[in-house]
Length: 409
Ligand SMILES: *Cc1c(COP(=O)(O)O)cnc(C)c1O
Image 1 (cartoon, rainbow, N blue to C red):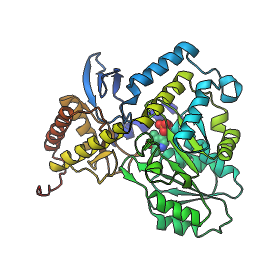
Image 2: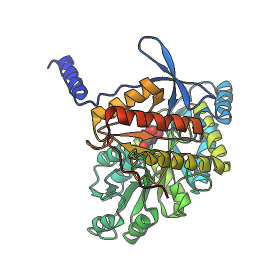
Image 3: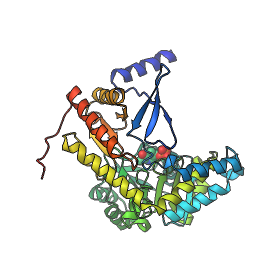
Image 4: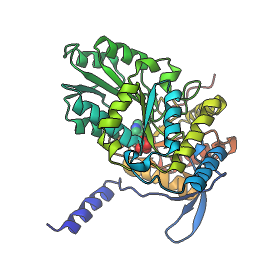
């Protein structure tokens, strides 16, 4: 086989479909978020306003977080030096696991190198090792859950998105004694909708099923101490396993599960993605620990975040920009075509210094390509004015779809 030819051809296909991915070459600057430098191929740089970061609260540059990372680097050096079992457990990992457990109101927690690995490992381990386990998965679940479920080789059923009735129907095909695991997310980050957690728990409990909740886009942002939507909705004790990331609102990197002591010990003891991978650097654990401690004590950051997102949605809608009906901090704007979505993103960047990455297939279905805007507490009114003006100008220039604006009250 002519391997090189094959690689090139498949890439050419992607380009023809308008969904070849080009990464913005950014240089973040501590203390200036959401501003960043954009490096161009010709060696020049421009300052841009980042409007699509998953550093939802700007914690990645927070003084307390950066100071903790520096202090730990000075004290411990760069790497952890091993897998958790073989010399790689540092005291910061232990403290962080205790903090994550307490934050989620669970007995125990377990760290992973990423949220992806946490989902993949926990789901594949449980699905593969619980005798006769059947898995039930929301149709819009993240790829990391899908891969974990697939890898488990357990029989699986897909239920309709955020639909407790559809879940009930699927669970009803099995006797109560069959071990079952129901996997879903709280905030779905491409549409910005939120799962009916209490109703899903009602159904799962009725059928004797365990629940696995991905709080990746909620951790840090919902609930009095910010552990997620399960905290906000008062259902944490009804969720068997809460999973989250340290890379989004927490602003660092890594993933976790929080659950009962026995369940966490089980995944710790049988999960290959945990056992066979080196432990994150102590400075990373120290930074995440400082971030979570701060987030628990600062609900005003979450209030400001929600206000910024609500204001952004309202202001774009006032001008007919088609914002999807998100009930979260995500502001998805529908374009509906891969090439146009890329053009809109390019124009925003080149003409207006605004960076919003286009979201195309396979992240979202073909025909629903969109711009996904994520306002943070650090996007001020002037930045918001600038964004709204730029979006309008791009919408005119590309003649993109607008919605009729309801008369102001
Ligand atoms: C980003 C994401 C993950 C993976 O988390 P990382 O820490 O980035 O690996 C898992 N689930 C969902 C829903 C995500 O969006």
